[in-house]
Image (tube, rainbow, N blue to C red; front, top):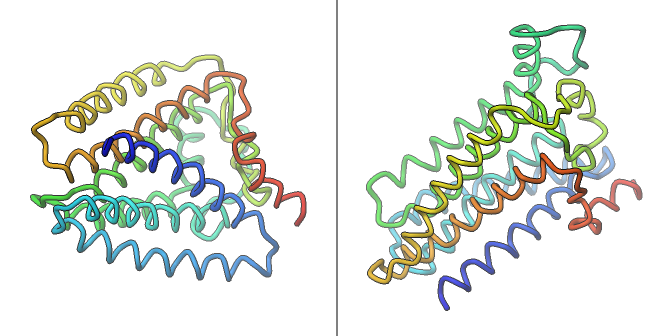
Length: 253
C-alpha cells in the first residue's frame, strides 16, 4: 500500500507540476517577472530541501526530498521556457549540416545545459553516502532523461511536442528533425528500462527500509513516465490533451 501510494503521488505530481509550469510560462510579458520570481523562491526552497533531506531516513524525508528536487527542476523549466536561460544563439538554423549544425543547436541551449549541471552538483553532492538519496535520484532521472530526449529530437523523431513550446522559442523547431526512426532511440529506451527495472526491484524488496521503498517508488515512477514520454516522441500522438487546461492560457494571452 505504501508503494502504491508513492506511485499515485508521483503520477499526480507529474501531471499537476507539468501543467502549472506550462500555464505559468504562457503569460504576458508583464507577468514573466512575477513567474520567475516565484520560481526562484521555489528554487531556494528546493535547494535547502535537497541539502537537508538526505539525512532524513523517514517516509516524510523521502517525500520532502522528492518535492525538493521537483522545485529545483521547475525553476530551470520556467527559466528556459521564458527564454531567460537558453543560450547565446537565438536564431533559426541556417543551411548547415553535420558538426556545424550540432554546434549551432547546442549554442541555442548552452546556458540552459550549464545551469542543469550546476544544479545537479548542488542536489547530488549532499546525497553522497546518505541514507535518503531521493532528491538526488529524482533530479538525476529528470536530467538524464531530458538529455536523452533532446538528443533524440535532434536526431529525428515523429512528434516534437510543439504545443508545449512557447512562441518565443519557436526558432528551436528549426533545429529538430522529423524522422520515423533514429538509432539512439532504442538504446535510450533499453538502458532506461533496465535502470527502471532495478529501481522497482529495490522498491518492491520486502527487506528494504520503508523510506527506501518509498523513495525508490517515487523515482521509479518518474523514470517510467519519462520512458513513456520517449515513446510518445515516436508515435503521431498529441499528449497536450492531458494539459489542455494549462495550454489554454496561451490563447487567452
